[in-house]
Image (cartoon, rainbow, N blue to C red):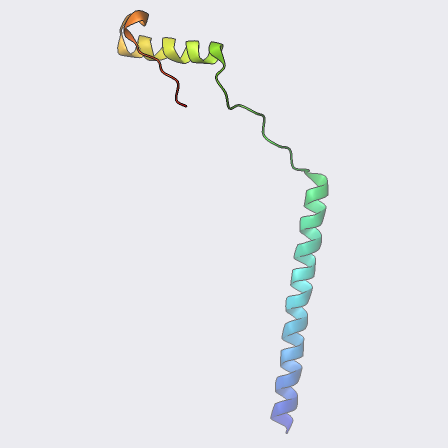
Length: 76
């Protein structure tokens, strides 16, 4: 009978330790969310004509071709 009592005590202590660790983790995550709020990334998708022109010029310069020789098509 004393083995049963000892095993129950060990089980309760183990569960208490796990609960305490999870509670500390939960509180620390909540505090980090308040300190460092989530900021949505900037919207960068789309065809900005200036960006497309710069990329095309870079590709043309890398390939050592004339700008008229490069073919640019929409990715969509």
